[in-house]
Image 1 (cartoon, rainbow, N blue to C red):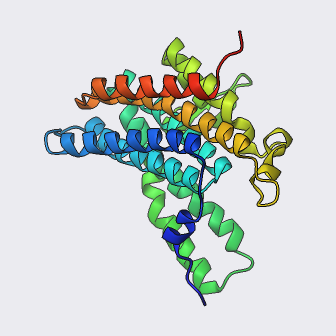
Image 2 (image 1 turned 180 degrees about the vertical axis):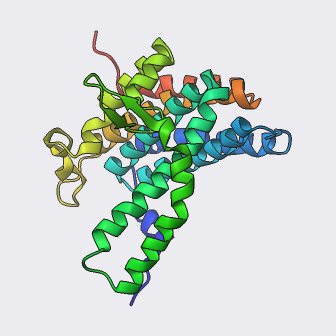
Length: 279
């Protein structure tokens, strides 16, 4: 069997100069973020559960930023758009937790016990009538192992509905990402609305998002469509990144103000040159 050469695959994807300007801008954004994270890594003391959560979340978000760049570099527009939404959701959740870390960090972390147990229980239901008996028994043993921690925390994730029935939380805080954004204030509500209005069609694979897919084929390749799609994803990711680095400045002692200003200026310049507004 042949092995796919990822580097060669990426190298075969070429763009016109105007697309490279957008990709280079976002590449510089990712690079600046990585450098700042490495600079602060030696000085940030993760001596509380909240700070430890912050370190892990920031590392994951930097990986998400990198994934967005790589996916765009391979013209995987829909997948890049999905990762921008992941990036936005992570920021909203972090900001929501940061409003009341004393109460919300443990609520967020302990929900892992609920998730582990639910995953194991679903696996047992799925595998029970079709898997090898040994595999079924392993899943039963795992469920029994997880049971004590599940029982310890499950009461924290129950609520009483309007009919007086006890129901399980839909997630760790029983709030949608949209509701979390609302509770973080108008800026985050706008951010959420921008990301979801711009990228939901790509993520859900709607007819609207597929209308120009033929433009990526070899025979009907349309560089203008490629420019518009890549610019849309980068523009939206940059809006999230701006708010994300402000959060890191505030909560993790980062200092990206000068880099932020320069990158935002470049973004505005690209917008004005490539997508001029008609008078």
